[in-house]
Image 1 (cartoon, rainbow, N blue to C red):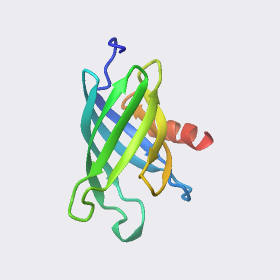
Image 2 (image 1 turned 180 degrees about the vertical axis):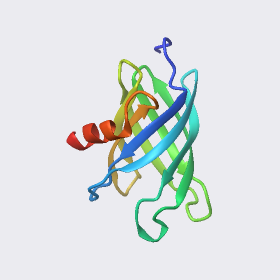
Image 3 (image 1 turned 90 degrees about the vertical axis):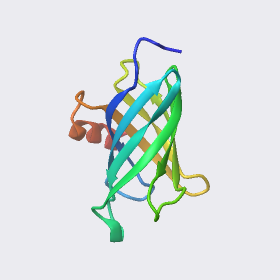
Image 4 (image 1 turned 135 degrees about the vertical axis):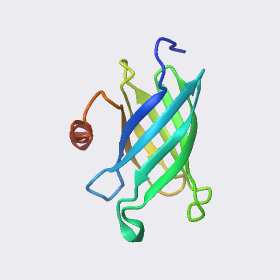
Length: 131
């Protein structure tokens, strides 16, 4: 286990949908204790009848060296037990996590998280859309 850095902090994230052109945005507050991750996310629902609504979720997971995995579980009566699984790889400088998300048995896409204060979201979006 790498112990010279910690993932605790605020991260900005982008995720792609299988058929959407614009990535979704989310903010993550991560807490790393040992190999365990916990935290919360906030995102603005991008489309449909809930467009513009703020959606909250909790997350729990693990980090082993540069491998990061967590499950994001939405809160609220309209999203009971709705969970999204994330599997990513941490960069050597501990500033980005990139990988795939999936809803078991349904759909999946890519995600990128950047540590707040290290890059602009616009710069991260350009990198994300080129990949």
